[in-house]
Image (cartoon, rainbow, N blue to C red; front, top):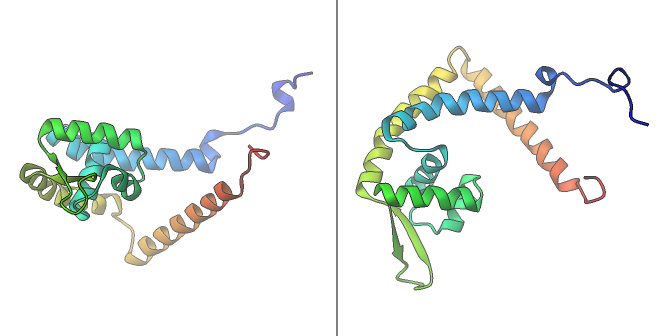
Length: 161
């Protein structure tokens, strides 16, 4: 027998923490994305790959995955688009001919250096009204909640899913 709606515990999404985090993420991500999307037509994934390669050149595609919190498919699509746009190039490693390294082109580096101050300014707009201590507390709480969520992932087994 299936329970009727009034017999099921209700869940208001607006009060459900995972939903609130999703809304929080979307608002912040979209407010930053407007900068690089409007200026250069970059996707969120392309932007993230550019930032990673700007910080850790040269990298293989799998290393970009490790540094970006993107999956292989997202990185692959981003790389394809960045290569087509001329913002990225591939090169064979001189130390290991089997390894393909990814580099930002001169144009890719120029665009990244132009965008970084803009997204940093947007970050400050997003954090406006928070004292340095409140920002430190916010980041600390975010880290604790993420750690708790990661612990939950690590304790799940096929039987608990």
